[in-house]
Image (cartoon, rainbow, N blue to C red; front, side, top):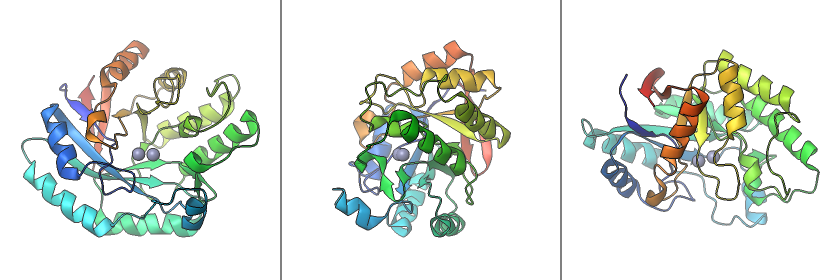
Length: 275
Ligand SMILES: [Zn+2]
Ligand SMILES: [Zn+2]
């Protein structure tokens, strides 16, 4: 097992909310010495365009999948022997069978190197644009049920993205998912991830939160206690300056818990990288 720098959750200008081009992002990642760099562009078949626009997200656009995979496969070749570029995708989970069917088709057509499965939306509207009016137990209870449902998605995926994402946008004073309050739901999610041999993401994009990561440390500790060992690190960078953000901090936390390696998924293979 070798020590390498990794970042498996990033977005370039191919995503509507990504700022820097893929060329700029890759050049910056290489300069930082990253050995496994994953681009995981947004595929938002979970979003309802009308609802998103009405809620104020007027720049939201579907990705041009053809352009994205074409360009990134070329860049992947250009970087061969220099940096392992993984051409991935972040699929936004929806209960909707049509949306899940579209993900299956996208997967079969483009064969991304890996897929991050993330819950961003409930009923077609991203949590970032949702006005929450119910109490914390109701909002979080429903969110955790969606996360649990997402683990049974009809399409293939490797990584379970940023559990706790909703907490970035809720109006509650204490946004933490306490293990006491949601113990059964969280245990069910973590046990299912382990049983399905998926990888749990530690996402360092959380500027609105007091927690340093998504999910927060107590959930990662619980995952470890339950026997979970497969973890990936993702900055969720949407511009180059955030690539690798808080990586050292995440690594220190994971080591404190007991983890000894990260897992990099690539075309079905799980590569172990020493922490
Ligand atoms: Zn996401
Ligand atoms: Zn993302």
